[in-house]
Amino acid sequence: MGIATIEFRCESLNRTTEFRAYIPDDLVPGQKLKTLYLLHGAFGRNSDWLNYTRIALWARQRNLAVIMPCGENSFYVDHVEGRNFYSKYICEDLLNYTRNLFPLSDKREDTFICGLSMGGYGAIVNGLKCWQTFGYIAGLSSALRVDTYASATDGPDVPYLVSRGYLERTFGDLSKVAGSDMDYEALALSVPREQFPHMYLCCGTEDSL
Image 1: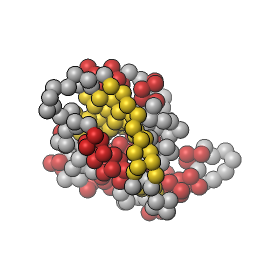
Image 2: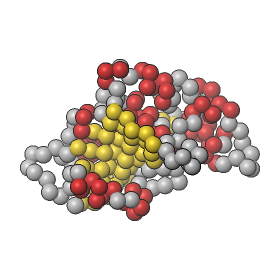
Image 3: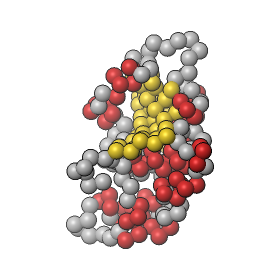
Image 4: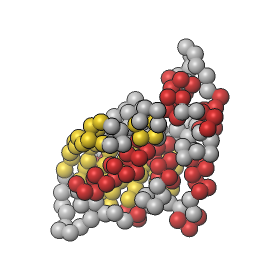
């Protein structure tokens, strides 16, 4: 198996960024790999998947390529004021770069996106936003709290990730999130029924999310 850390200049983020990649080493000449784009959670790193899970073994058993980008605390959405377009990065720049670099299939049915917590939100939103690209979407303990953002507050007892200041820096005008391309419910309603991606969602019964 091959594991690589790749740095490249990303136009959507206006800087150099990195991703981790797992690529099976028993490729058949001319073979195009099914690919999972795997998004980490808040306060995490793309290395978390390799350090704390068995993703490499799981992918090896399935002859699956796994691409793990670094999303910082972006929620994988476009930050217009900061000119950090994370959604465009996931759906366009990263996809195109990895397909040019590795023998990855460009078929919708071979392209998956999954994430944990913040990454689960990012996988669902970007998977639905770019439904022509992703045939399968999975969210693990996804941070699906858009309906609470408009009433968010600041204060010493308010956790950072749900504070109004952080949410405004991340999502912009919170009164405009509902119904936008950052709203998973609105996105789900916009996807043609016959083309809706396969979805898997899970969350523990004791998980606050």
